[in-house]
Length: 514
Image 1 (cartoon, helix red, strand yellow):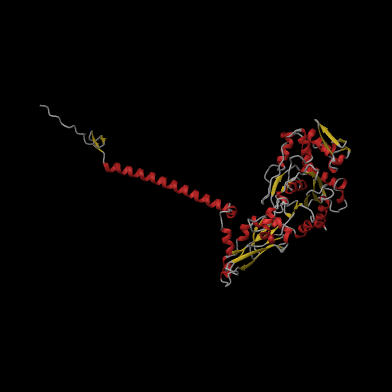
Image 2 (cartoon, helix red, strand yellow):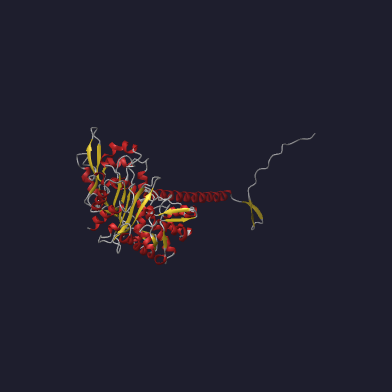
């Protein structure tokens, strides 16, 4: 009889190491191997902990750096209500003109019936600085909105803040906010405001060598003291666009002021054109079945480049655009002059727009050459190009702030003048100065000819509808021999630049130089 046994699994054998001295295998100590495994585990855990600490540290650094670099943007975020909390602790600082004495915006405080602190913003000059200074309520605008972070913060030393903490009245315990000193010149701003009386449009005045904005006026305007009461009616008025700052956000066909751009490119491609260009104007220019005529079909006869520019000969510039300027060169010039591009300006603005030459027909190029067609510019952008031509081709970044002070008048920040870059060569810029001076001495801006301060510029009449209605333009600078200020004027729907925009510019130049 067979007997069956259940086969048992053999017990696990300990690992063996060969021991040469004994000539046999011996079991490795279990504790030694276990200790090795523990050391390996500890090394892995330590490496992971170091890696985690480095990643966590980098993340903290990144978030801190982002918060510091973008503190203003984060502060202005609609989901961030810290401005409301600050308004309960700090009194909004003032905005001053460039003399640091003329107050453009200030805050009065009071208590409402519920015992809450109320801050009332006051604008002593009413509508004169409406668009540039802006308003603080209902989302804010202008300098009020852009510098909200600084105005609502108080950078007084803690030792001085203690004195406010110890006052009995809640209103008196508010810390005074920082004060903004702007670049705005009260006399020039007043001159611009008064010169634009009865018109709709825009004026901007800048310092050629610094980029400081001395004045900015947009019409029609509003009184920011009553912005809350008139808000609904202002929003409902879609036709006049009263809240729109036409200097920075109004897009207009540039008309004949665009001939500045034509000449910049022509002189870049053909420097000899200043002396050698010649054209026979019959009042009409025709090519490829398309035609362009001079204003009122005026016949200018034989003209060189200087005469074409001074008398704003459409036929001559249509010829230049079609037959002398290359598509590639003009495209590069437009880009260098910041068309379809960001502008070096901090407050809200809209980009100027243009269809590049390689997308245009012969008619389109002719229209572009005289500033018509689809081309649209802001007065701010045209002022930049003009100022660069006056400054040897170099554009200074336009800016509205000079300094930031604490409530005791101590300087916290100085906003230095910044060079943006070169928009054209120094040689081309010098030739443009001569061409623009000829507009005053021999051309469409001759009403400024007798001024002692040597103004120079370019006029424009830009058609904007099928009824041949046109906007009036002037952009220029003075003195031509050593430019100090640049003035750009746009008057909506009034006609010829020489008849409307030039006299306005003359009043502004007079206010500056007299």
